[in-house]
Amino acid sequence: MPFMKDRFLKDLGIYGLTTMMVRLINFILIPVYARVLSQKEYGTMDLVTTITYVTSVFIFLELYQAVARFYAEA
Image (cartoon, rainbow, N blue to C red; front, side, top):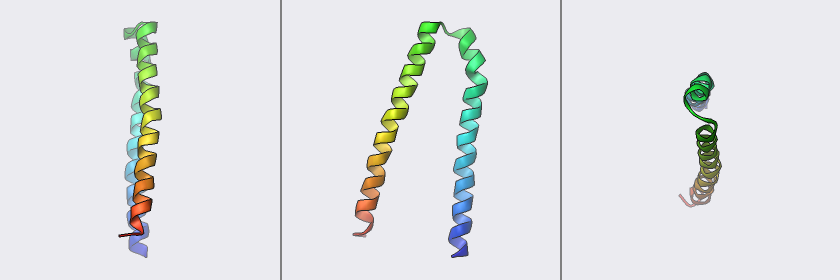
């Protein structure tokens, strides 16, 4: 049981750290985007990013449901 806890905390740290780094990089790049892109281009980029995030939520939701469904059979 302690092995599972250690592994869980290690995985949580790795995924948490990478998520925080991505958010930090996006936050740092806001002034660069504002300077380089026009309002229309920035809006288009934001729309594409939002659609990507929403779509990925549904794709990963289906993946988790499939794992949960077939886990009991395995």
